[in-house]
Image (cartoon, rainbow, N blue to C red):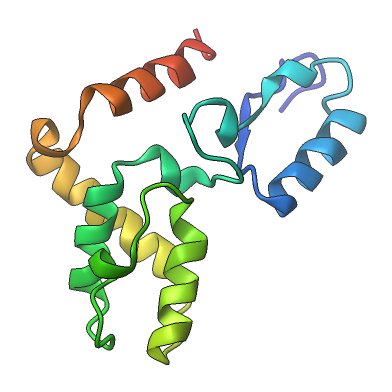
Length: 141
């Protein structure tokens, strides 16, 4: 990035680590352009402490995760609470089921969700998700 280039938009999780990163960026590199640093909570209704994964359709994440993780006795679908951010639930579920999530599990999950969305986007994307995504992408306009 050149000295005169505009800083890119940044989207961060709204968990504790994400909020700390926002503060650090806004206090330093993004000091003059604080509005270019965004948090997921600003785009997800009815949840707090969200992460990037919460921008995706939860039922689809649940479906892909249950196919991906075969070590559990209880399906994540039976554990999932749609009124809470999904990543902490996944971690808690794995712990309760007695296994550790493999390194890179979020990447595997994202690739599985991407494949499903590309194969049939109308199946898993409802009006609420479209509204969230539209609100988010309008910031980049």
